[in-house]
Length: 528
Image: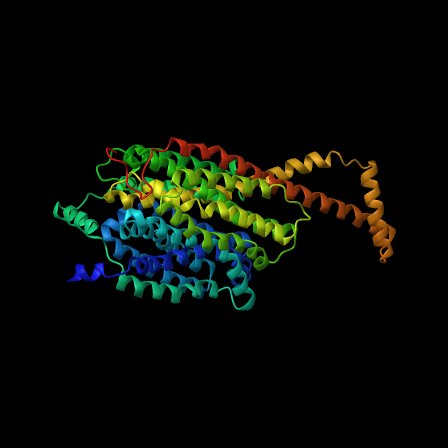
């Protein structure tokens, strides 16, 4: 009777149920960024100290994410998912009431551990809930969640901190988490094949815990995430700590790959990367993560530091991209499901559009208005709207049903690492390219140069006309010229980052030609 009851549940109810918590977790990765200055003031700590609120969450998230498939099998997928939602909800409460930075950091570590399991488990639930021919539509919903949440985060975070209190940035997770738990308990169930696999393992005495793999992956992930998140702040290789952490990360991950390839029941199934379509899809997931998270981080920085936008206004620029994806991702799903456009073709075209959008960004100037930034984001969203759905179909095209759980863990691992690398890249490269342009342009501005003297004279005259003394006006004029130089070089540094990401995106697009042919419904061809 229980099995019959399960079959009556509409798969879209399941899809919406599991998307709620994933959306909450992804929203939390960006909503707290805007609140950091308010948290620093409220707790009486420096801004550099409170940035660990972000770092601790990302580190814990990175540690648990590659283990999510194994943990969901140990506890049961539904049970593990509900544990993650419950822990995320409870720790959100403790983040909100935290009386000190130490308390909030402990809560954020636990919150990161909980959040690391949500997206991979949702993805595996969607794969098992929908038949191959209808998965594209399900992943259209998933696409909307993972792209829209980071875009909404800065806007919502800015509005909450401006109108209420920074603590509500965390408190809003509580009702969402409770709703997710109630709906999950009612509508989500582990598939029979998954339960049968767990029964067989339990009957055989249970699987041996891969303690070495857990330790290597956990330490390696934590070290690498700290390197990426703190590298620019701590001067990269100028910091002994960063050098040691990088050495630990490389050693642990290298050893982990060697160990996991030989382990009878590995924590991370690296053998799956021998499947050509899955390996190519993982590369694209990484590139997707780089582009999405790098631009979501960089665009608000550009608008706030160079145009004087408020955090909420800068976040609104990201809105058109999210809207485009919301409306067009379902269209992409229908094109794939009906066989109108093959996923490989759609992926190649989508990556080309994303690359072209990066070059569009790279031609913007200090005179660019809101409309052109919003249009650029919509242009980028057009590419992502038609990318993620066929990419997911490609990833699962040659896999067996019993591999779905482990596949979702790996694809999310590549996407998250892409996001971490992307943010580290733009944070570092924008500053270095700014220094390069400042040195280059500054060398052409000699004190006796006619253009410089004319500009200084004009500004000096304007300042004197408004009541400043000759000496103060001259000093102010030179300061303003330097500020103009700094703004221009900072803009050039950002534009260089967009250009490099554009070339990188176009460079990987031809990989889709190496993918094995498969039917658009997601099944491997005969004889695969």
